Length: 584
Image 1 (tube, rainbow, N blue to C red):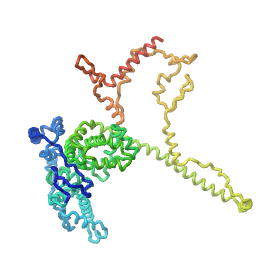
Image 2: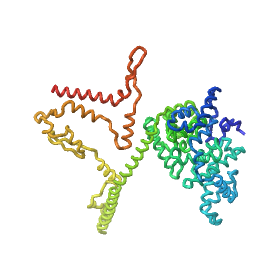
Image 3: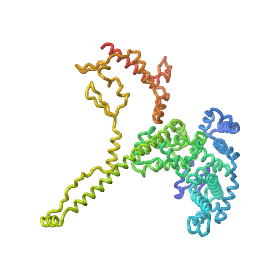
Image 4: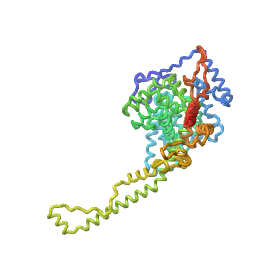
């Protein structure tokens, strides 16, 4: 009764927001005012791209990327998505028959006396198969019970998938057919890949594709999305491993890009899985502005799922002011779970997404750092486990010995001593145990053990003649500053250093410059730091030389990069030191 009409993308426009659809609130104002001339030009361009796809995809893809950034027209979006996913190639080269799988599903539905067109009745009917006694009485095979369990799970999630879209509304005839198609597509994929089966969140991906494609075409697009590593492979397995790893990567990137916001969220005990799971598993279909969602999908299907981080960082950039003001979880979580349409308005939001610089090599470097940190943690745990077990064993043995000694001491007190203490009115005071009790708890002793093993490098200099180094490396001992008196010519009378000029100025300058040359470390963290530092930076205002009135000449960005400037400063300092040595 509250529904007035459908918007241009098929979502119901209500006169007043209904309570049962609070989780699927959509914005219905779209600003796509384009004149007829530019519209026809865009249509001609994309018609040429679709008909000559190999020409645009072979070699450099910069030209196609430019057109994707401008936006794919709705009339060509379904065809372009299929070409980007390669679903037609999968369908032609696979032995899997979609129609045969649908027939098998219909047989199972008929045996259970249900239909995919009556979802609510089917959910109630299938619930009896969860009863063990019924399954044993009817002698139903375990394989069939597993299929029926997947059926029920899919049917439960269908009612939550885009309930305000006319394709999936139960009250509309088109919606009943759409819900049946969504059930069949997800159930057939569970038969296609039994190792994954069905996972919550798949319904939003399948529903998005069914809004644009036919049933079987949507199924093969789902296969491409879920099976290719470029897209969502690993997102819907039983452990959700890729979701967890991507959440960690996002958290590290947020710490680098927006440290102030990261510290605020960390102080409030916010974990990234509390909000990014909804974003990543549904590919942002929960955002209120549907034209923005379509543009995000265009970008992700073209570039891959590495772009989900760009979108997530963009959302945090636009929400930073509101999130920093929030002081409680009840104020903060609605900001990220129910994002305002003003934040994700298409024009402003997509411009910010494309401007967000987050190269793929940086994402891979962060992933490698996380992997190394976990491996190092496992190695440390394995190294300390035997010693910690030994400490705990000794502490347990000492506590047992102390308890036994206390019992022996108590048994030594005679009846006469007890009567004497009662007459005198004094309490029986136990003699202290001969064995000293260890005041350190197992946890404290374990921490002491770690502290002893992780003792920092300490250098103690007792005199100028004698240099005692503890835990120092050979390179430190060979340093000229710590060499003996005979090699460095130390004046013992007045206790002053007068270094002998063993190297001339040219050799010293050459060796210092070679030491300043940047080298890449072996660990992922060192490689990332090296690449970030040696990436060319934009010119600063001080690097622009004015050659004349109203004209500017730019100096070379390589010659004026930070590391070259640092070398020049060090050269000057070395020359000044050599001149001072000559004066002395």
